[in-house]
Length: 182
Image (cartoon, rainbow, N blue to C red; front, side, top):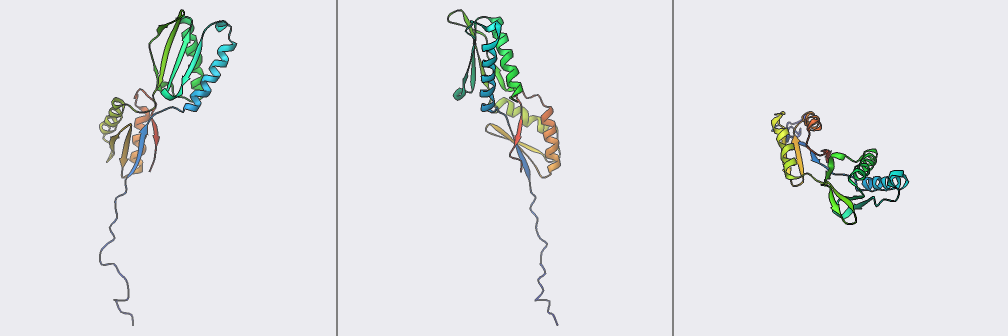
């Protein structure tokens, strides 16, 4: 004879917590790839006939996340920038993340241009990303700005995939990266 007390039957249904999934939207460039691209560009400049005897140079300021280009003329600066940009593209560095500065006169009849590297989402871009997610009215998808990134969360992984597809089509001014997928 088995007693009902010896059988363990739950007196209440098991409560399931709703699990939320999320990913972070960030931006940035691989500084090692930028370094490699700069080295390749410098080698090409050293070998090109149109740069022989010129003061053309590219200085990678890693600590400031910036590139300093110096050339003899505006025409040469354009050629220098084209070489650099081609090498960056070849190395997989998003050129959308370049903040190209104005052409300035420098000493010794040279021109100079500073190119900043966008390493994180600025406030405006983060707002743009969060607004795009909210405007899409995806089912239970939420976007929250957390410093230099935007966390997108939803209870359903498929909804997060939709959000990613939406953000890939968004022109945010920088290349968006998706990480920390949970």
